Length: 516
Image 1 (spheres, rainbow, N blue to C red):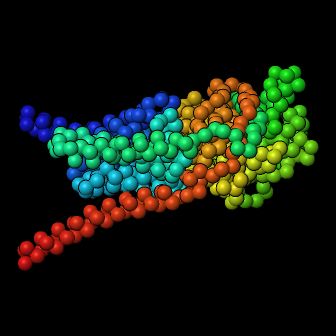
Image 2: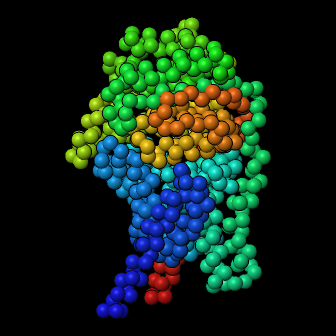
Image 3: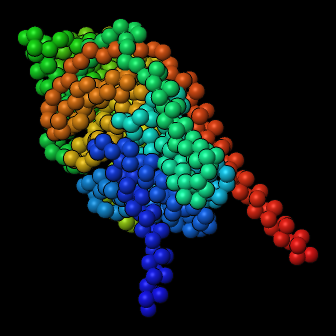
C-alpha cells in the first residue's frame, strides 16, 4: 500500500504542478502588478512537459489552461451563471493543450526554449482566429503592461512581446536544468542567453517608447455617465443611461464656463451610452443634440442602430454641435455569444440566457477615424482592442489618437475592466499613440503613448476626465510590419515540430532496417 501511494503521488505530481503553474500565470495579470510571475509560471510548465509524450503534453497543457483561465475569465459568468464561463474556459484550455503537446514534442531539441516559445505564440495566433472568429483574451502580452518587456510591443507587436516572456520563462527552466546536470561554462552561457536575450532586446527597444507630441496636442474629454445598475439588466433602463451621459456632458460644459476645467477640443462617450437609436427615436436625438450643443465641440456617441431589416449595428456616431450626426463607425469585431449567437439552437440546450441576444449584431467593414476638430481619432470599440488587426488598421488609416469606447457594466466589479485597461496600455506602446478609454461605469482612463495611465475614474461613478494629450503620426515598426512577426514565429514553431517529425521518421526507418 505504501508503494502504491508513492506511485500515485508521483503520477499526480505533474498534473498538480501544471495546474499550479496556470494559477501562477493568472496571478501575474492585472489588477495585480505581479507581471514578473509569468516567466516563472512558464518555467514550471516547462518542467512538467520536459520529455513527455504528445498525449501527456496535451493533458498537462489542458490542466495548465484550466488553472490559468478558470480564475482569469470568471467574469464571463457574471449575470448568466457558470455554464458559459465553463464552456469558454474548457474550449480555450483545449487549445492551450495543443501548446502543451507541441512544447512536449520540441522539449528534447537543442535550443528547446526557442522552439517552445514559438509554439506558445503559434497557439496564441490560433486562439486569436478560431473558433467563431477567435478569442484573444489572456495573451501573455496583455499581462505585461508594467513589465520590462513591454517596449518590444513597439517592435513586433503583441506576438513578439508574448514570445519574449515565453522565451524568458522556458529559458529559466533550461538554465536551471543545465546548471544542475551540465554545469559547464558553455552550457551555462547558452542557457543564460535565452533569459538575457529578451531582457536585452527590451532594453534596446526603449527608445521607441515616447510620449512626445509630434503633431501638437489636443484637449480631450472622456465621459463616464454611469449606469442605474450593474449586470445584463442595466440595459433595461436605456433612457436613464443616455440621460446620465448627457447630464454629465452638460455639467462638463458648466465646469468649462466656470473655468474649473479647460475647454476640450472634442468629447468621447462610451460604447452603449445611447442604446436608443437616435436616427429613429426623436427624443434620443434631442437629448444627445442638446448635450453636444452645450459642450460646443465634436462628440463621439456610442449607440445601437436598429435598421428595419438586417442585423443590429454597434455604432459610434460623430456628432457635430452645429450639424448633428456627420459620420459613423460600425464595430468590426462582433463578440460571439455576446453580440451574436452562433449555434443558437444548440447553445439553448445548455442555457436559456442565449435568448438575451434576440437579434444578432452585424460587423462593419472599414476602420473608423473621426476628424474631431482637426484631430484624427481612431475608433476601436471595446472587444476590438483584443485583436491586433483591428487596432493596427485604425492607426494605419490615420489615427493620431486611439479611442476605446467600452461598456463594462455587464461585468460588474470584476477584474474584467482592469484586464481590458491593461490591453489598452499595451496598444498605446505598440502603436505609440495616446489611448482614451471612455467606459459606461468604469474604469475610464487617459493613457499616454508610453503606456502610462495619467488619469482614471472610479468604478460606478459618474465622472469626466479632461486632459491634454500628445498627438503622434509616426508609425512604429510594429505598425509597419503588421502580422509579419507573428507569421515568422509561427513558421519557427512549424520548423521545430517538423524537425521532431523528421527525427521520428528517421528513427522508424532505422529500426525497420535493423529488423530486416
